[in-house]
Length: 355
Ligand SMILES: [Fe+2]
Ligand SMILES: [Fe+2]
Image (cartoon, rainbow, N blue to C red; front, side):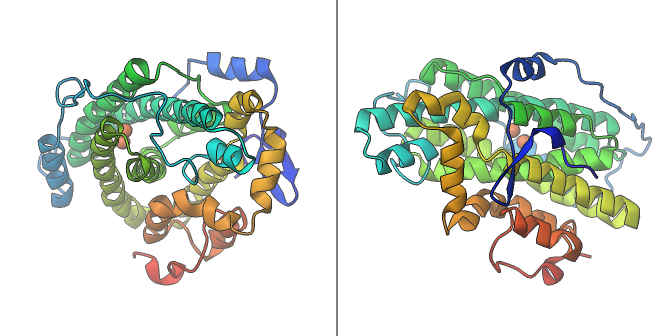
């Protein structure tokens, strides 16, 4: 499988990054609202439950519903001039600016900007989750999966609702979609079969979401933000569980060729996500704070602890889940290590695999 966006790649030492610099091209990517999506719709006449665990998850999903308007206490403040995340360690820009001796007000402003950018990207991701999950209600062949995907659609609607309201009511700053993320989300939405759609959405996408939301929930000191993120995170863990349950079946039913297709698809998506190294964010915000995107990326890549830092979000959920499903194998493990997505001897690939 060919790497995504081969013509946007350039090397920082031996790291191959994806970089979008042409404003016109970025604008064109954002303006591309139509995506041709192949869907093989499947009827089923079997209304009984095939996979009890999946029906249980659907029951849990129904019980776990919450109302983004009335269950969240929106009267709680999110003061824009207070730290809501630690000054160092959680967000890139305030950490760097603090190291460079910038004053506190500048660091706070940069933290808010970077967080607004991150939340905006999460919001665009939630919209993609909503669209893709809708596809799954059509494409999945079993009634269990249709039930669950249907219940997940309303979860994703709620996530779009709650994050856009938080941005609108509390932050007041919103960023358009990053070009790399747009390419990637289009790729997930365009995935050709329900198996690859399920892998893309439920394992890769949800796995990343669980890692990111957990990091924010643990890091933030603001009660409103913590409450919202925790609520979303509980839903996302259920979605990731759906991914594992349905992917276990997919893996069991797949031919060796299909397995290779899914392994490569998973690698390509995560490789693309990782290859950007926040360059899109740095190009959007860095210059405002005197930070040159290239210099920042070079500096990060040169840190001895870079593989540990870089892999943290991937190692949270998505890499362990892929490994358990047998979708990171001896064939691809080294590639994951080389790009800093898989790191350390947390588990043995051969032992962790589920057959
Ligand atoms: Fe979501
Ligand atoms: Fe989700």
